[in-house]
Length: 86
Image (tube, rainbow, N blue to C red; front, side, top):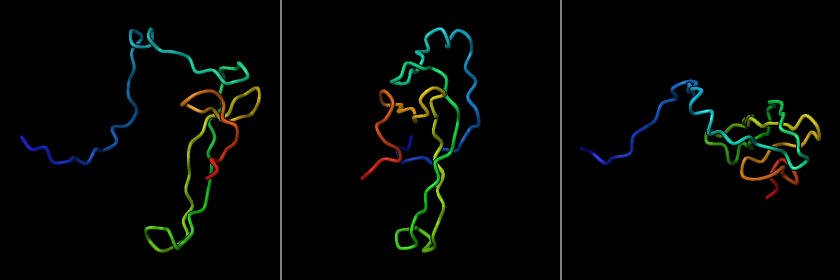
């Protein structure tokens, strides 16, 4: 048996049955809302740091709270600002 790293291929949507959903914990925004709208955050990667040497457009999925319009932070409550500053 080889311990070499494997390349994982996307398998599409994962089917989750009702028995598993009994253990699901709902995510709630800092404002108390638990309904979110899918959106896409779009950014530009400059050619100097792009792996292909050309300017690229990157897309990142994000969930926006229906009530306060803030992005959901899956690591905790609603984030203070988006996109992440750094």
